[in-house]
Length: 200
Length: 180
Image (cartoon, rainbow over all chains, first blue to last red; front, side, top):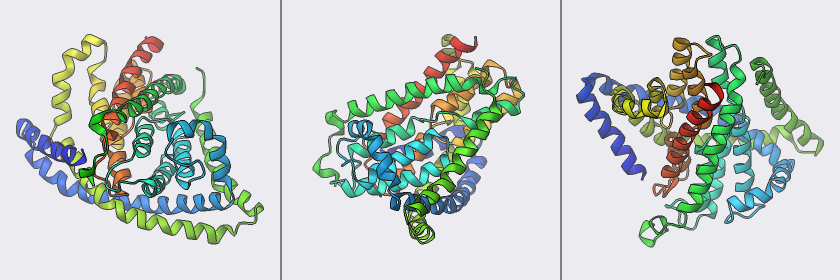
């Protein structure tokens, strides 16, 4: 899927550039964004290092097991293939909590950690497991309780009650998260997405 | 709905600090060697980042090309008649389209729309609600699967896009109901 998406994105860019006459801009975008990607990665490294360090402390102190136990009833249903005490559960839970609190910077390190842990449970190392797809579904549906950045932009533009979007955003994100979970559970059963031997 | 933005911001600052300071404090109480443990865990972060750099470059270059080509404006113009039929302001469409690809681009568009139409306008509030209900699907899928070198992502992308589409539609319906 990623192979196809990546090619389609670049191909569409070239076709659109010809139509809009922006071939020059597309050419310079290649180098600009390659450079930008590395800068983003560099900026992320410090944050990644910090949060993984903090996570280790929380783990050693037994905080993560404690939290994972508290959320066990929900997690068990969402990720039936993952044992409750597995480190993947703790990392996923931290990622989802950080996303809910709007700590996007902290969410990414926990999410990447969760993926490496889920990969240890994965029996087909080249193919995404059901647990990974469910985790991604929750992640890509946004579970942020309070969209602080969006509120800040509205406030900057002189909104009288910028926080009035808290309710609407919460309802919208609830709809998208439910849709994502239902879709992920449904798609897992489709023959099209069954894991087959040739995949490996 | 009289929640004050400054109070919310203050609250998230305190939640943040409570995590950063509270976790080591509790760990110290549980007799964990906090500093050594921190450094030990933090080291893993560098290896993880090195693994995702190629994926970040591949994805961001494709996104950058797509943005520079004017593809989002073209698609927006093509979809405008359908949008006005369902009551969605066409101004918001480019943001909804770019959101799965790039969070910073979408944030920039939100800032622009808020400045242009005012922070209290329906357009700005709808755009802000869409930002809250959707996520940068392609970016997340690329780096999360990148770190474990998985190329067969199965239904992760379709599910993410369904979630984004539902988020946009829900935002439209809810905003029309609350703000109009």
